[in-house]
Image 1: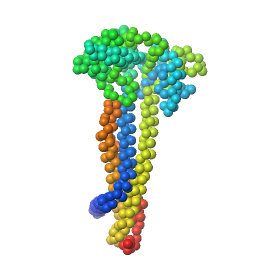
Image 2: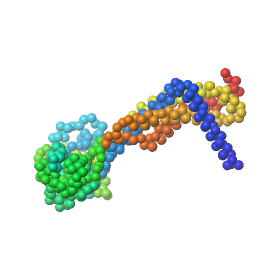
Image 3: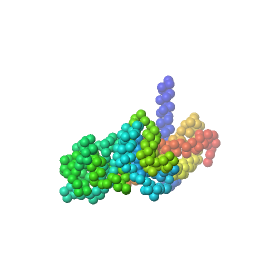
Image 4: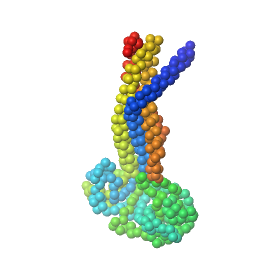
Length: 435
């Protein structure tokens, strides 16, 4: 008996939902202009939310793709901070003042600082140094006028994510003995060699012959490239030091370091700061003349920016959804007014309050979802019209689509509660005799 009752109730609910949808469609057809104005707010609201969510997702994926080239626990010791620093050396991405003239007066990080850190650090798992510069790269008749070169020391492959597609990485002997070897990025190989196999060939960097021993896998474009492997030629630090004067006043060496697994990031940074102060012979109370940049700082700054953009999107969309919600509520109150006699007859024939309530509530939800679907279609059209670039690609995720439908449904429920409740409370006698 219980199963039969459940089946019977289910059939009744399905019929009610079908009837509600048919009533909603009749409302859409009956007064097209009124329906358009009512659904316009919901459509624009859902469009705004999904469009902003999609843009934020695209921006987030692009930037994180660039940040993923270095681990989140890696720190960089440099003359230049990533953002403006306060008196305690803490960086603030929200600050609109970057004291460039103060930072340029600092003494660059030098070879002696790297060696002091390497000899005395107890918390680091790896410490490496790099220096970057631009030179002319040539192979036969092909050339790159301003080719980025990064000279790296031992351990760089444990700091950066280096994926070798062809050939190999440097041996310990090549790193220490200033061998004239190079690992090229995907785009450099494409420009200099085309379809030719570069392994074992010699190119010229600043007029010097260097042998290609490896090619990195294509990394792809990103809006922020911490380490743009596709467009870099990597050489041993000892060899790079023969190409430029690393002891020159304006040459910046960057020291990258990573803590041991059993050491907290803060303890590691505190020790690194203490050792750098000792290496640079800063007196107690004297301000640091260097910066320790955390790679996780960029990720945290990105999360803060994404959160702010999402909040702005909700505010913009909220006003449209509010207008759309009032519009649907208006349609439903008019619908209750027009169908008062029908409601009276239904109740006189034994229809329960919850039946009338569900009938009008489902009608409001249908109208809201219809507006939401229109908004989603507009987003799909917008994304299809925006040309995809290598660094920024907008794709609509299933999660965002479902979010749009769910938000529409919630708006429909909120907008339809009052009219549905008013319809359910009508007295059948008064409703039948109404004009």
